[in-house]
Length: 256
Figure 1: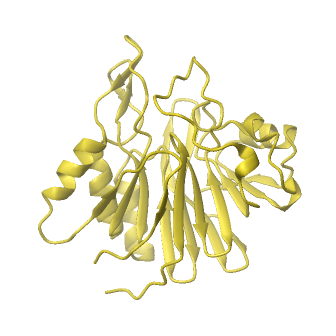
Figure 2 (figure 1 turned 60 degrees about the vertical axis):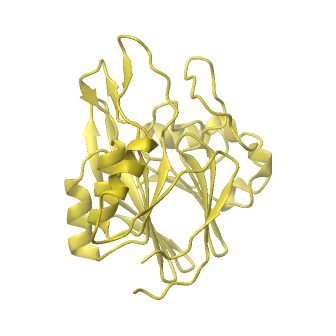
C-alpha cells in the first residue's frame, strides 16, 4: 500500500472541465462555462468563473469548443498574470492571450513545468485530424493525477507507467464519441478502466459523458455505465469508479 496524504479534491464544472485542488494548488482543466446550443452538452455548467479560487494553472488538451473556451473566463476575478496556461496547440495560446491570460505556452509531450512543489507534465496522447492532443500528469507531494480529457489510446499509458511508475487517480472520458460513426475520438468506459489499470491508478474519475447524438455526425457508443461494469469484472485489484454530478466536490481516499 502506498502511503498518501488525503489532500486531493476534484469538482466537476461540466463535460471535461474540472477544478483540481492539490493542497494549496488549484488547476482548472479544459475551460467550459458556455454551453451553447450548437454544443448541447446534456448537463448544466455547475459554477460561474466568478466562483473560481485563485488558479495556479489552466491546462487544455486540445482546441475544440467543448474543451477550450477562454472567452468564458473574461470574468475570472483574480490576477490573470498569476495563472500559468499549458496547452497542446498554438491557437490555444492566441485565445488565452486575447482574454488576458498572457502566461501561456505549448507543452510538448515530455515537457514539464513546476510551481512550488507542483509539477505539471504534458504526456503523449494522440494526433487526430488537425489536432494534437495532450494528456497531463499533475504531481504534488505524494499525490499523482493523470488527466486525459480527450484520451483515446492505451499504448501511451502503458509506456508512461513503465517509465514513471503508478499514478493515484486517472481522469478519463468514457462515452466513446465517434465521428460519422466510424472515427473514434475518445475512450469508452471499458477502455477508461483498462487505462486506469495500466497506469496503476486505484481510482477512475469519469468525465466527458454527456454529449448529444447528432444523427450522421456524432455517435455515442459508451457511457459511465460501461465503466462501472468493466470495473466490477476485475478480480485481482480494485478500481473505484467515481461518477459525480457537476458542482459536487469529491475528495480522494486511497482504495488499495
